Amino acid sequence: MISKSYLNTFSRCDFIEVIACCDLDKKRAEEIALSYNIPRVYDIEDFFQDNEIELVVNLTVPSAHGEIHLRALHAGKHTFGEKPLAANTKEGKEILDLAAKKGLRVGSAPDTFLGAGIQMCQQIIDDGQIGEPVGATAFMMSHGPESFHPRPQFLYQSGAGPLFDMGPYYLTAMIALLGPVKKVTASANMRFTKRMITASENYGEWFAVSTPTNVASILDFHNGSIGNMIMSFDVWGTGHEKLEIYGTKGTISVPDPNRFSGEVKLQKEGEAHFSSYPITSGYIDNTRGIGVIDMVRAIFQKKPHRASGELAFHVLEIMESVLKSSQEARHCNIQSICDKPVILPVSGIQTDQDTIN
Image (cartoon, rainbow, N blue to C red; front, side):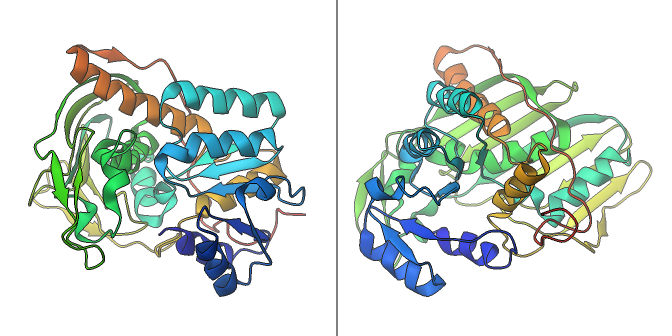
């Protein structure tokens, strides 16, 4: 479902060459290879034996993310995957530890925070235009992906649900804007134990739900801000903004963290209304995979990459702790830490000018 977006982005990059692809359903891999002129199509075992492959882009279902990351690292390859990093923090730590031992890079989606919308918000906040951050609200409330996804069952199993499926977009965006989280408390439940696919393909097929689908949490950030986040597949409609950041001198309305662009709105101290800020530069189109390009550039430059394994692990621990907090009715301290990602240069990162040699 997502591979075409990545491949479209890679096709515009001067220093990435896609040389092979693989899928459990080999016919699907062959179709993608034909569409994008990818020379090699492999079975899973042969894929990791190709020594010419330097980096693996892992677009499997969430339950397989950890296994594929580990196989890539054991084969001596850098790895970048879709979110979440792994099914749990135990597996996530194994990935990071193995990468460190082998001197390899791990990266993870979402990379939408590298889009023009959130990058502009990050610049506004870092410039002090809303003063000292006070808090945030984040809302992702819908009635689930079965209305458009022909095979949504995996999104209602452990390791997915609205928290693990959509939460990474919102948490990553908030960390990019406010920095890491130190403590969470939450409640979670499930209001629909069965769901029906209403997408045209497989319409009318019922399936069981096995993970919480309505999750409310409070996030305490290291910078003193307090965030409120609701992730739900149990809601038919909402009038809330997707993400807002509040400061001592103003409020910023952040575009949808699942998109690269959107409207940035700011209301400053003493103003009666929000004003729109036009986006004049950066990645405004669907540029999924830009995190991979940034990671490759960083490998050449021997610098940190932005959509890092450490950031993804921090998000993973937050989500795991949210469910633990609900189950155990207590606050959960977050043990991991990550750097607040550095803002992208205005010139962008998609071409090889000035740095890749």
